[in-house]
Length: 267
Figure (tube, rainbow, N blue to C red):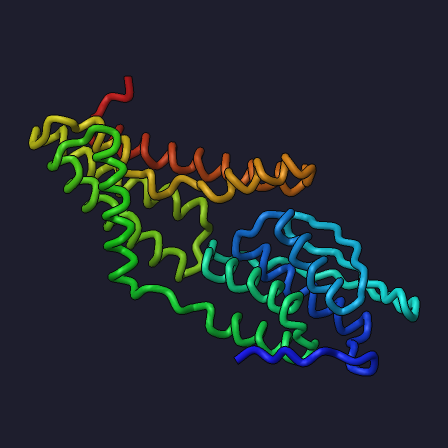
């Protein structure tokens, strides 16, 4: 049940409280894959609901925010670091919904912080590892079919994706550099997918090999970078685009290594 109690003047949080909370909120939103324009709108929505004004500078790894209370000329500035995290559409949506609850339901500061902490604490409600592996494998096999792969190619891609994605999970759990993780996962998937051509068990081996690494393509960073360009957040856009480009390069290196090992010509 959401409390809709309106705030009185005495209940209003200070600029310092609002600034510290919005810095935490903003870095959590950026960390889970939100665009800069969504971050700005959500923060401004919350601040306006509490009678505050904000000035935000968004950097690739840091968020600089200043909150001003027009009624008392109270001003506070905070800088918080964006912690690297996996893209989470669920967390993104729940944090965005919180900003609307503050605006529409007039949540006070204490209730908002409580709900925010609850969202962060319970954001790990993901699928089991087995369920996640199966869905990723099914999605990549579907891409194979979309590009004209036959049933054998789809099965090969599913197996290659299962192996590569499982390796990715294990390596990330051991905090191995993500670029090394992408290269290793692409290498394993490419080696397994090359079995379609090596043993002549399908009619579309090229499709199987080409689609076996699609699960590693950084789609969200690429889309977010173009969104940031449209809204003139050029520094964040360039950073995300470079990160995505490096990931694609690592993917290509791993895939080419697998093809060379299996003697599958690239031309």
